[in-house]
Length: 209
Image 1 (cartoon, helix red, strand yellow):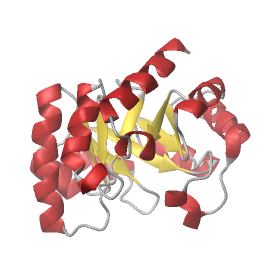
Image 2 (cartoon, one colour; image 1 turned 135 degrees about the horizontal axis):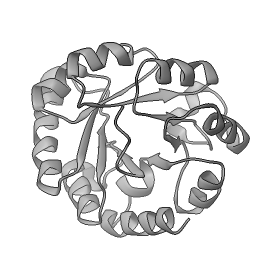
Image 3 (tube, rainbow, N blue to C red; image 1 turned 90 degrees about the horizontal axis):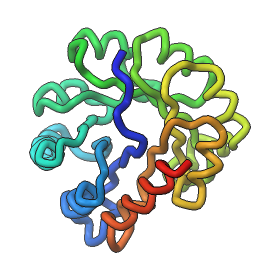
Image 4 (cartoon, helix red, strand yellow; image 1 turned 90 degrees about the vertical axis):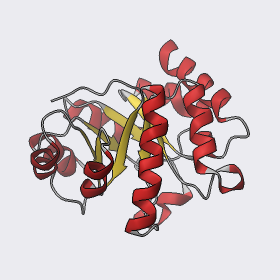
């Protein structure tokens, strides 16, 4: 099992990026010190996604940053990504490990203790847990779980837990106090006028705690 070498994971959403320029926003974030990008553009078809993933691999490689592809093990393999991030309906982490090899980084989205246990038993390297706070991108999946559920989740697993859902600079301290190893987020960086500055601020908060 490979421990996550980062505490901030940027989940992409090109619709949130200024002028829809995803690559420009991510490059700015990487300039600010970001070291993990999860490519999550679920509405793109396979051809468009693999083209974008290939360009993202080149960009993250230039900065020595980790690239995870959401759900699509085949595309992660095709572009030489560092690993995948799997949802509850994705293939099991053990199967992703078999396909990607022992060096791949595998994350899993979790929302309950049952899913946490399945991720850990399946050999995941880290998990996201949430949504901790309200976020429009997760509103269809139910109410936020809150900090007490995050605290219980962190106590229930030996895996690094990344708090997800409505996380911004103002929520860093309380999520880390609840036991989170790091945070995964979209809007605070993707929609920022200056993603580099947003990342630098977040990393300072994550390091100071």
